[in-house]
Structures are given as C-alpha cells and as structure tokens.
Length: 291
Ligand code: SAM
Image (tube, rainbow, N blue to C red; front, side):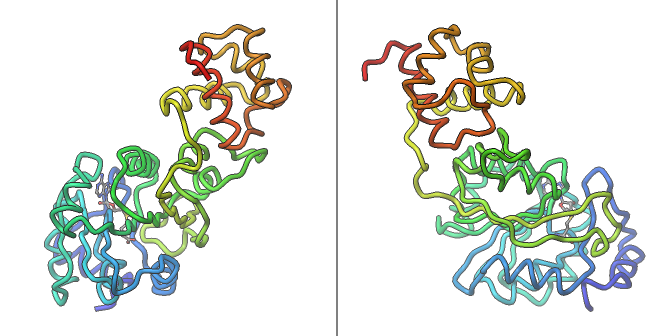
C-alpha cells in the first residue's frame, strides 16, 4: 500500500469510516518526493530516536521507521489509531501515543521511551498550534537536539528572520534565543489532501546547548523585546520608555547610550546580543543591582 496515494486515503476513509477533521488541521501529504525530501533534509540516521507529532495515517512515520532507531508518534485523533495499526504494522520500532502534545510531559516520554537519549522532533502540524508547540518545546527545555517542523510560509519567514527585515519580531528573537533556525524547503499546497489554504515551509531548529547570551532575567529580557516591538514605527527611546519597564525617558536615553544603542533606532534593528545587553542594563538599573 503506497501511503502517499490519494486512493490509499480513500480506501482508509471507507474501511475505517474516517473523516478529515478541519479542527485538528488534518491535511495529509500525498507526494512521495516531498516526504523523502523532508526526511532527507532532517538528517535522520539509524542512530537517531525520533518523536513525531501528528503522524496522521503514517506517511512520514513509515519512511522514517526504515531509517531511525526508534520512533514515538504522538497523535491526538483516536480514530486514526486503527489506521496506524494497519499502515505501520510491519515495524517494531514505532510506539504510538494517543494524546494532545500540548498536554503531555515530553521529557517524561523521552526518559521512559529513549532512556533519556535526546531525540529529534519531526512534525507536520496544524498551523494554528505550530507556534504554541514550538514554544512549549523550547521554553520547557525539552530534551531534544533538533526540531524539524512544517509551518505556514509566513511563520517560517518570521522564525528564521534576521534583524532589520520586515518579518523580524518577537517570534524570531524568542525562537533564535533557544535554537539556530534555518529553512529546509518550501512545500506547495498541491501535495496535501485536502489542500490547505496556505503555502508551507519546512524549517530546522538546531537547539543550542548554551544560550547565545547571558541574561540576568529571561522574563525581563522578553518584556524588553515585547516592548521594543510593540510599536514598530516608533524609536527605541519611545517604545522602551513607554513599555512599563520602570524607567522614564531620560533614564531610557542613558541606558540605551550605555548599551551602545542609538536611541533613534527601532526595535526591529536590534540583534539578540543587543537586546540582551540592553535588558541586562535596564534590569540592573531598576533592581538597583551593582555592576
Ligand atoms: N504527518 C501527517 C502527514 O504529513 O500527512 C499528518 C499531518 S496533519 C497536518 C496534522 C496531524 O496532527 C493530524 O493527524 C492531527 O490529527 C494531528 N494533531 C492535531 N493536533 C494535535 C495535537 N494537539 N497533538 C497531537 N497531534 C495532533
């Protein structure tokens, strides 16, 4: 049975009385080359353990199982469990977990299923929960080495964006603080069934072993980043002093100058290092911390 064939999906729909759920973002890949390119692009080897989020009918799971050491696939839709039982029956290195990835303790699964060895995460997810899932994995310090994920094209542009680009924003800084982000490939709408309304891009997040910059307070850093991007057309002098960070305009001017940042610059021009230096300087000032 070729899983990427539309006739296989039709067979599954009839045999299991399966109906696509729009709510669960069920757009299944029906193109072999795309599946191969995603898997090749992920660099999975026989040494790797993999967590797949949202296997669907198992198109990517099937091809990955031939390469990877072990796969744990997390699928929310229990009507797909008997389907996966049939499509993946020849493999002994796959475990299916029925659940909502947002509610699961990923590090516990990694400990129990892989003995603590850090896996790679692969996912082709519903677009509306891609960012919460990526941020959950990053912020909760999931013990994973890489995240290879298909996201809406525009979200991919924001995630991999560099300073001074229109797409550079809070999401770029938030993701790139935890990971090195790059684009793997673009994916047209035509390779899905049913076709989604947006174009997709596969991105690769290589998790950093150490953060790129030392922060005095991570929550405060993100408050400064959010303030800087809150009004994109305004200067840092205005966004930072108006950002409820506990400093007035004069103090902001001085702290920007101490951080070697021109106060007429806009937030979108700041690198992660500059955000870190600025937020550390403001944090020290408002908390009266000695240098
Ligand atoms: N990987 C398959 C493919 O490429 O054909 C299916 C991709 S489909 C876009 C997304 C899959 O994620 C569906 O199977 C859906 O049921 C599942 N899903 C949706 N929300 C989920 C969640 N919160 N946790 C786990 N799986 C989820």
